[in-house]
Image (cartoon, rainbow, N blue to C red):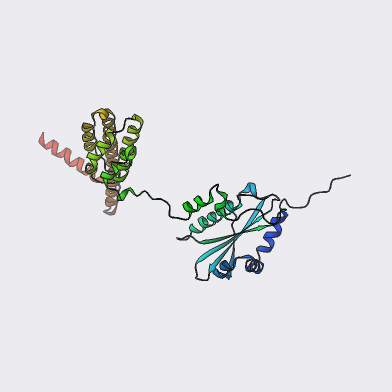
Length: 304
């Protein structure tokens, strides 16, 4: 007896869900029925527009599918309603976190063509075996300590703005002092202004690898560090003189090479300009030089 050919799709839920929700009238009914009242009042559902985007990872398509609608708020701002349908029969404790990730992905997509973040309202459509849905839909409840997570993620993130920290205060930053000081002043034209504090901070570092990292950062991160500055630094830090002078030599060589390259480029440019000028005057390139050479030879003959 021959086996019956399987003509069903791997995700029949996905096909049915997308077919219905892709219709604006159906989507409008769905959102009017299921969006919380405060969100529904926020959305102008007459502006619904289906977006060609999916954020579910390819390896999860057999378990979930999604659909994204753009919508204007009643205040005229851009927004989205992101609906995720869960196909798997077993529930996912971390579903709110997944929905947050997908919502952020929708925001990122929006930012590619806009300057501000949009509101994204995530909605989970559940038709699993267990009833009712057994888990919280608050992503903060995915943490072991939701109360602490709420404190961290509902407040402005900590900021370390070293541009407003006084150098004398930075000197109290223990093992971070030298790096912080360098990073604060790395774009400064006159590095000598922070030389005294930099010397003090470097004297406290015993780790040679860290010293090497700092010196390389100084050379590679600043466009204004000079050989003279490095020489002065070496005099003030005799224990690191060899390392610093090696950097100074590198800087010299880079300057020489840069000068050579600039000279070559300038020579090429001058040659192009001279050729264009001679062509405009009706002369072939090189004729002027040949004429000058002939005059020089005649002058030389006269001298003899």
